Image (cartoon, rainbow over all chains, first blue to last red; front, side, top):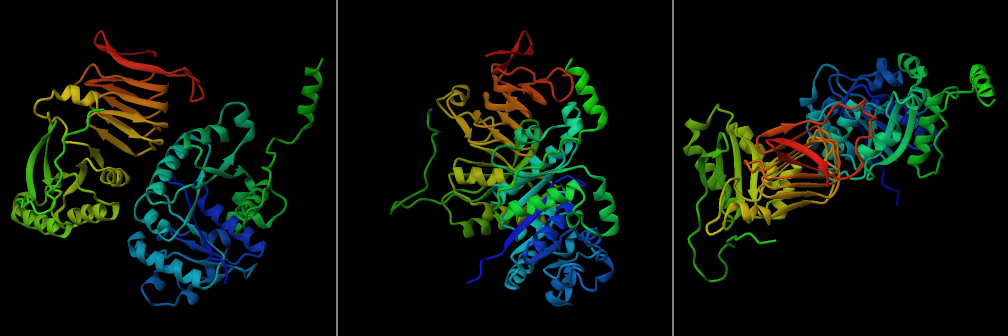
Length: 270
Length: 248
């Protein structure tokens, strides 16, 4: 008897905090670890997950085609070009979020579970309206992505309240785009500041530093988690391992010791 | 805590006249709104049929107004799914926006809160016969055992006790006092019907705004969000005509 797949929605409330990047990178990292992963883009009308994976030219059918019966689910799923364990169910670009309702979303998720995917990640759109309701409809777990800044934390709090009302309790938290130097200078909220507002019921799943590699990776359609050379990618790979139950210590995000840092410290000691 | 006097529905062989569903105009403070009274004794489906009948009768005066509606369930237990279906139907077919629910049952209160509706224990401003509403308020508290998150609104015709934080973007409105065990970061309005003796106590007072009766106050500007403020419990009350905050 195969284990039931996990259905996790990646949400935030606020737009632009890194939900799509997170969903893409965790998906890639999980697939690299041997899991069978399906990514659903629930941002109908403003699809981006296909771009993040570099699969935008391969879209023939999308989720609205499936829901409206023009295509079978299997026809709409696009295999990742690097790892066949990973598939994408893209959103429609020419429709909007009223094109799909919660029940249809649940059906899509149920059909994917029947295809024996071990992880189904749903990329939630920003906001709290129909798009959010659709994305959370089939999910049993949630990852809340927040940037360490007031507006994002406020919206994350709202979202967690709405998730709890939907019986999606104990969401996991990813703090994204942290800049350690600014935190040390008290110019940016720390992870502890964020956790203080969001509360103890929210488990910290990972901390992803602000990394220029993300910008290039999104533009190229090559998720950073595939590349060994950047911190953000490493953070996402660690998150994937933690999702699978492994205990992985958090990365040391302190700035590297530059020459002037060491020089400064040498003089301070005198 | 004095128990509210509530009438339980008819039981056993005692024949009783079932109260009909009522829809009437209502003054809620300064606002003229609609009140839908669904008696607790009737069966749910039967009550819904009556609601439909009442709405059809008043269709001409209701339509196109986007009127705000309060639903009084009395002792009836209403679950979230039922309440959500009812609220959606009223909005879809009659353009009525349900803003509040009155009911003494805890499941009903919970369902209302989860849907973002204000939840009253009884109609605000009502005074029960033979008891001053002031005395009643003082002995009737709503206990919220967890943090109130941004966007959630708790309304109660008595005291409110929050066993957690009140996060920024959340609203707690009480006719009586408000007691927050954790950090008050959001909006707290005590004495909402005009009681200037009402107080707000918080484990850490860092509110967006506090209001007592008709007075509004905000925290003094701090040096950036990282300012620690006071780390001890504080109480806000009206003294000499303005809201003052002091150590408990």
